[in-house]
Structure formats: structure tokens, C-alpha cells
Image 1: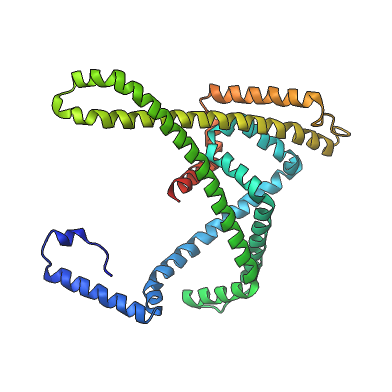
Image 2: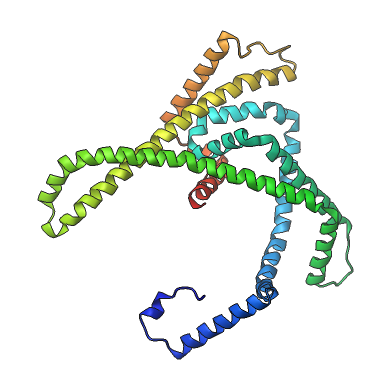
Length: 334
């Protein structure tokens, strides 16, 4: 069946349109009889995508090597020891800005971080095997790009385990879907609350604002007053609901980050031999007091900055900004 084309309903068919529709029908019939024709037609696009990926691989490899060099340089400072503490500080003072990212991390933690970690490690191990196999295999001099691509693809397919890759990709995809579903449910509740607040605003707006608008707007435009009031009140309610959601997220990040700081900092000091053991445990009455003070300081700081980051820090947090935007786009698009 041909797709709907409203423009053809408004004008008589011409010779060109008849020929185009006839050609489209012939292509559809040919693909139904021989599905591999569809793959052949997409072949040039796959080739272009492979060429683009081949051009990007060297840059990705260089970026990976640079990151590995940076990681080696910071090893004397024990990043794995102080990492949780630094993460807690970021949560306490800047967590409210990254609302969607923090919610996604919490969703992964509840759904199963261990499974995601194991699947990711499986994919990474297979990537390392494929990379080493591709490095060891050397082709003949003067081979064409097509032959080189086929040779490398053959070597990579022999090196990796398809069962492991399939299971890992499926596991990661399932976790991603669960995270997106959790985020959509959470933010849908905020939108529902905003619409409810907007309905309450609408009653007062119809009682007080509508008469003034009718008196100041020409009669032929009165039909637009009620829709504008309705959508304006709903937009105001949703904005307030998002603000409340951000405030609650900032408060949650401050408490969670303060908890991580108190626990992780003591463990780091013990591992670095500055303390013989953890002094303030969770059952200690001072534990709650210290966590509350740190959380309060972080929340006040976030409110003071309007749940944003000053310029120097915003530049260094650019990757997290990109993750935040990507997650927000996924939640809104799926």
C-alpha cells in the first residue's frame, strides 16, 4: 500500500506522478519477492557509514590513549581511593543541576548496577580481543580498502565471542529501557502534578483575569481568551512542578552525597594509613549530625547559585552537561 500523499488529493495526477507511483509499486513488489534486493539497495549507505566509522576510529583510539595516559598520571594520588569522596562532593554541591543524570544513576543502582558492570566488562574484553587481533594481522602491500575491510572484519569475527556479545548487548539494552521507563514515570508524575496545579490556577484566573481581558481586548478576539488562560495556567503549573522536582532532587543529592562523603572519606583515610579504623559508623549519633550539616551546606549552596554552576566549573562539567541533555532527549523522545 502506498503512503498517504495529501498533495495528490488536491490536484489531478500528472504523467510524472503516475510514473513515480508506478515505479514505487514495482520496487515494493520486487522487494516482497526477493527481500535481498532491499539489502542491496541499502549497500551504498552501509558503505558510507563504514567509511565514516573508519575515519573516526583513529581519533577515538587517540582519545582513548590520552585518557589512559591521564589515568596513569593520577595514579600516585590514589584516584580509586578518593573517587567516591569526590563524587559525593559533586552530588552535595552540584547534584540539583543534573536532575536527569542523578535520577538515571539512582535507577541503575536500584535495577542492578552489578549486571550493567558485568555486561560492560564483557563488551570491553571482546573489544580488546578484537583490537589485539586486528593489530597482529598484517595484510599484503597495496591491498584495496574493500579487501582490507573484509580482512579486518574476518579477523575480528574470529577473535570475539558472539554469544557473549549478544548477551551483553541485550543486557545493557534491557537496563537502558528500564532506566528510561523509570525516568519517564517519574517525570510524568511531575507533569501531572503541574497540570493539577494549573487547573487550580485556572479557576481563579477565570474569576478575576477573564473580565479584565474581555474589557481590554476587542470582541472578535474574545474566543482566544479562555484557551490562552487554560494553557497559560497549565504552563505555569508545570513550571512550578519542575521547580519543586528540582528542589527535591537537590535535597536528595545533598543528603546522598553527604552520606557518601562521610563513609568514603573515612575508608580512604584508613586505606592511606591516616586512621587505624573507621571512627564514625552509621550507628554513631554524630554520624547523622555530620551528614545533616554537610547536606544543609550543599543544599544552601545549590539554592544560592540557582541550581547552576559558575563559569569555570561549568566548563569542566561539560561532559556531564552532554549526558544530561542526551538523557533528557531520550526520555522525551522514547
